[in-house]
Image 1 (cartoon, rainbow, N blue to C red):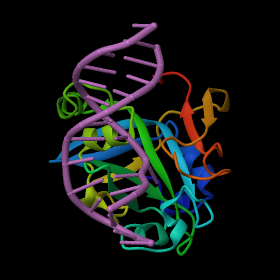
Image 2: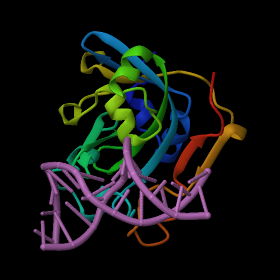
Image 3: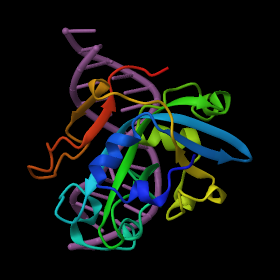
Length: 189
DNA sequence: AGCACGATGCTCT
DNA sequence: GAGCATCGTGCTT
């Protein structure tokens, strides 16, 4: 079952936690690729100085201000695409960054796309699944987009680790250290 | 196993 | 013009 807009409309921390164990699906050239989400991070509102929305709405971050259940895909470091899912209500900019997956469908295609390397990083994941700027703003609740999230493997609270978000070197406290990173402790099966 | 570094180009000031 | 929500390599312990 594809997660509906009501799932994404929940508080961002709830969505980030609930996405652990869920199945991220990408249909690429007619082939279904999928991975279990094992790491995600929350970015919540203009108050959050680690969030792209901190300085208000811009051309790049506009999708985050839109309705929940859409993909916010942006380009960084001159070569990497990042995939986020937009959360909360329209007008409130928030999203969850997809940071790592465990491949479960189309593993051969994924391995080829990654040249055999891992899928445990936000840019590794987008490369593995063929996610790029063409998907910025698409609905995650309409299979026609070729990108959505389904129920996967239940993850117990005891298997969840939280901690500071990664890569926010110049972000001031408390945002730099706030524990809005979620990941599963050990490999799922 | 860990750290330093260079690659590379778009966005916003 | 500065600063990136990173990755892979190569070198040091």
